[in-house]
Image (cartoon, rainbow, N blue to C red):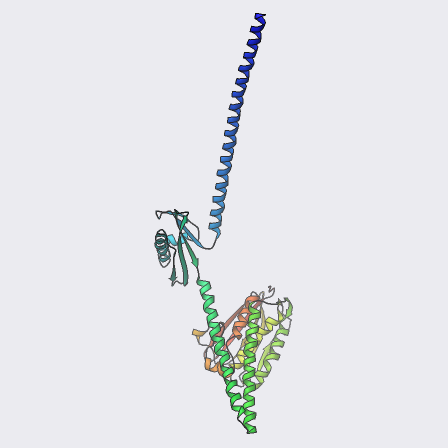
Length: 383
């Protein structure tokens, strides 16, 4: 009996010891599992942070804006590729780096600052540099500077202001004339005078209509609105343009001669746009030619290009004006423009048509001898 009790007690002891050992083993296993799980979570979190940093760096590297980050002591921590060239600049661009350093130092004091830096080039540039502190819940993380090239926005804004000023001026002239003529007509009883004034009113109304038509046409061509490309025979384009220009040519007694090839020259283009371009070249040539002096239109194939040349024996264009004559509203001689009714939109239309078709327009001119304008369009002109 006693032996049995001893055996049972020993067995119970073994069970208890085994249970304790098992518990300790499970505790160790669970602890190791938790440690492994924590390590995996930590590695995953570190990977996610690294991925986020990589994505952020790639994003900052990709933007077309300079980004420079500095810590609270002013030490630069990061520069994206756009801002990097300014650190190595020796000439005007060095002004940008100096502005960045100064603005970062001011931003470190807790205020947002900005400055425009003009570089006179060439090419001329205007850069906008801004800096701001990086603070979250009172903690200072340093500062960041941004560099923006505002050259093109400023150019477009200047063009907009010039456009408004020019169109206001050009519309004011016929509108003022119409107002004066109407006022004169109101108190006139002489039929001959009334008839003469009525002709003047009609001329000013036509001029006003032409200005509006040119503006609408230029707007459509600049936006390439409703442009339909199809095979077009250049001979048909020349014929359409001649029909539109003939009335002015006959009125000024300026003959128009043509030299067209025997074979049809075909391009894939917008017929309306090409006709408008050739008409404006013809219209300019006629307006600035003296009576009986011919305007000659020549069409030829040069490699993969179809060229339409309009040559006159008019007043010619001074060399200093030749680079600007394709700008909107630009006139070599404004007093002559007032007489002939041009407002400086025709050649702007020609340039945009050439650009829309992947082509170009060239000018050769000698003052007092005449001018030659060549519109070149590739045979496979595409939108």
